[in-house]
Length: 114
Ligand code: 5GP
Image (cartoon, rainbow, N blue to C red; front, side):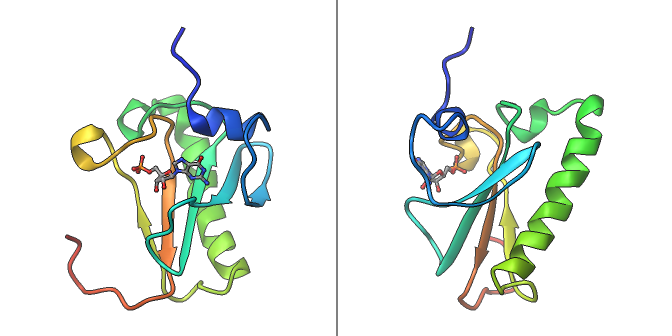
């Protein structure tokens, strides 16, 4: 069995977090080391290690996550300007191997991606 990630421990309530939203499929917490004035993490409860590990059966979950991201952005007041980032794999900067979506907002973004 693979070891629990920090996000599974947060989801299970074993480690505290600043949780701003939760439902039966996912939670949204504030990033502990924010890289923008608003930096949230949307995390599915299902412990999928990374985006590329999703399967066709995860399609409804993926749709739910994307809709939830938009709703949360509205809820926290950044709905008209936010960036969503998914790091897939260590070489892309992923450090926690439990799929999560970064919501970044609150400062100007350049037009490029990198
Ligand atoms: P990654 O680098 O995997 O895309 O993103 C992992 C993110 O999780 C990082 O931005 C990091 O700051 C955040 N993070 C790591 N440990 C914790 C924690 O214990 N609590 C919270 N709220 N965020 C964490």
